[in-house]
Length: 277
Image (tube, rainbow, N blue to C red):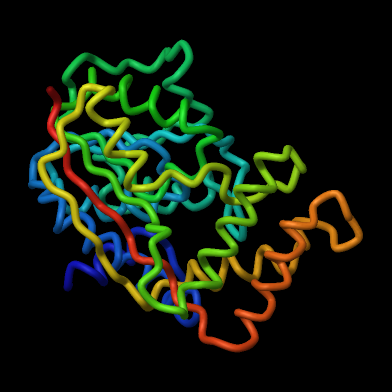
């Protein structure tokens, strides 16, 4: 069985649209893992694993002699259409289940009761998890705390520096959600904090990491741009009647126009590798 199909079998994705979506998401994560150079037999700590899209890829790559410990601050019943617990259960029941451990409601910035030994891992992975963090301070704390557990850092997040007008809608959707969260509008938005490449380059040395390489990756088939745009427009994150937020209202109007007049392409992805100092 080819690697991609093998990984898809771990996720429990159903044939049809669900499988098509999962295939595109998995292809992107394979691209990240290839750039990072994750090796067979590695021990990996994944922070912000969500529903396990990256975890399934990592578990396949590290092989029978490797191990992936995946953690997330969210509760097991978070997520849609499948909760974190439902989605990760498929991975645990698959042939790679014995080389994976999931733990939820784990916040490494607070007292952690997990049996994490110092330098127990070869890699610590942050794959599209930083924008879910509640602040830049939390990101800095996690980067610093994770340093004690692993010798190498692998990081990937959306890049707000658009290179195509078709990415404008995804950019606006991210900006609107982050601003709404900053104003404590209780939006339940996906995006809380927009952490940029410049932020990371400033944070990492202070957190004890030295960047060894960085790159920009493009995965134009990813559906995330459309998902974020539809989320904002469908849920009216900023109520149009709320005159106290004229800037956000203007951005919502711009977003609606962008979604109507151009295709919606995902932002590029900024990825980096760093070594523990």
